[in-house]
Image (tube, rainbow, N blue to C red):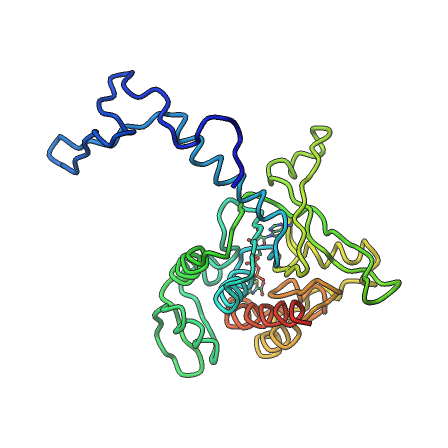
Amino acid sequence: AVTFDSQPLEAPLLLGKNGVKGDVSNGTYDVKEDYNGDYRFAPIEEAQVSRAMIKRYFNLMYERAISDVVIIGAGSAGLSCAYHLGKTRPDLKITIIEASVAPGGGAWLGGQLMTPMVVRKPADRFLQELGVPFEDEGPFVVVKHAALFTSTILSRVLSLPNVALMNATAVEDLIVHPDVRNPGAQRVAGVVTNWTLVALNHDTQSCMDPNVITAPVVVSATGHDGPMGAFSAKRLVSMGLLKELGNMRGLDMNRAEPAIVNGTREVAPGLVMTGMELSEHDGSNRMGPTFGAMMASGIKAAREAIRIIES
Ligand code: AHZ
């Protein structure tokens, strides 16, 4: 553990002042859960709240600067990958970087601002594994609200001790090293990060240098092109590791879903791509509001990450 100064981090600082009764150090404070007008909280010093957050967050940044797998993007594909990977390999340090404040990407709604979420079989097995209820319509199932899937998978992922999520943090670039196993080639070796509010202000402020997280495998799950989407696919092109983007094609549910799942792979050494970002990389169709491929592609990306780590 890292200590930031000579004071013990958990020590109460000024208890007894400001009308606070009791002593945290010897446990002589009273608490009461009384909803008839006498609800009493344990005493706290304001600085303890700051320290409780700071030490955990910065210890996490310190520890996760070296991760085993970084997942870029906490949409349905990135979260499915994190869940499968975190559960299958509890020994791996898995770090999810999500640019938005709210993780979940486009999976808080089904389609066109409507709430039900459609999932084609056999991806309903993943919903069963998570414990998300659905209505069976034969070849597909319907979750009553997309947020039920997203909130459930988020809680499952965050409960895994080896998975960390840093939201409001954007991946600004990829770390690329010479590939020692393949002379002359390059290998993705981690990500360059910044707080998203900083990343959005590079044009208005100077010298806001980013930070790094190294990892032998990066899984990119940044969705199709948009203000932030298709981040790694576009960066592969600008770095010369990919000739050109395939660009997402028009909607065809039957072609799109298997293309995304079966195409989920290590697109560049050290970089696995999953979810709708792949449609931009490969030039495959979009599927619109049907989410089975995002779940299955996330699982396949997790298997790819394990294969690379074990190779
Ligand atoms: O905020 C983004 C979102 O939560 C995040 N993200 C993008 N760029 C990032 C960056 N750093 C950190 N540089 C970044 N985070 O990535 C997440 C992508 O989630 P998504 O839901 O957009 O993508 P997905 O591939 O998981 O799911 C796609 C859902 C779609 S779109 C679609 C269609 O248009 O046909 N169909 C489906 C099922």
